[in-house]
Length: 284
Image (cartoon, rainbow, N blue to C red; front, side, top):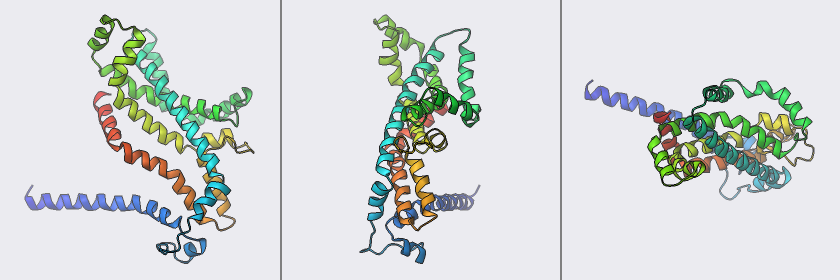
């Protein structure tokens, strides 16, 4: 390949990537500045920037208080934090046991967990709905946490089992010789070495649980007090309301409030995300 061909190929790739970046980023930027405009301004010129002295920050106040986004936000934080903690903790222990110890049924158990990745969870929503109602966990945050934990464990075990298998057995043996028990060897020696995998699982599960709508709607949609509803449900209610009277500024403000935590998490932990995914690709 000549130098000219190489430059042309790089320019073509750069142009394609730049176009894709604009295609992805522009809708987010448009929503952000539209959340500071009045409804009349949005209808008059949807893509115009808001006037410098006419920023309608009250859209955020209305979304937070009148649309109850403050309550939904608190529910989402609690449900997401509890679910991710349980997924990472239980997934790490299960993956370690399946990766380090031999049992005739161990491989069958591992494939049983992997079936959770291959079979859509939505197929079980009807029996799950009746089970949750029977034990009194319908329309509750605890019910959501348990469902999200069960739904996230297969992914966590699949990722973390590869990390634990890649660790030298000599580390475990040295820890035992030094006086560590089984749990101490896992907690003090092997678990810290699986940190890239733990970060990968935590980040992806945070994003998945934070924006999850289907199970939240099925399990808390009948909650008339809105005490267990999360942000995706609140945003859906706001979107439906905007269809009947013009509250698009408040709707865009709600979209920004839902998106900001995920965007902030990615910006803060982008290196860990890349490192964890790369390590998982090499070790899995």
